[in-house]
Length: 79
Image 1 (cartoon, rainbow, N blue to C red):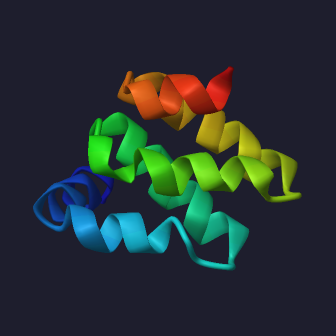
Image 2: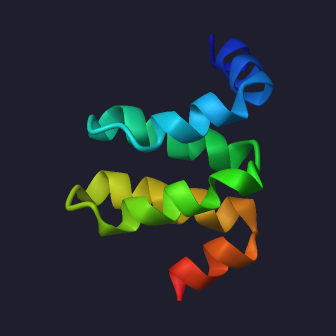
């Protein structure tokens, strides 16, 4: 199931970026993790915004995703 989800996400990165903005922290965290794993650089701003959310597991997922993305936006957000 995970590899199917990754294939769908890779084919629809804009939708995955939108999911990172969902109010449900589990959905947003899952989207952030996939964005990081797939290194979707266009998702870095959306993931960086998750750092301001109050949910600790969501912020941790965002930190890990930004580190995996290795973008200047992500690096700046982590400073």
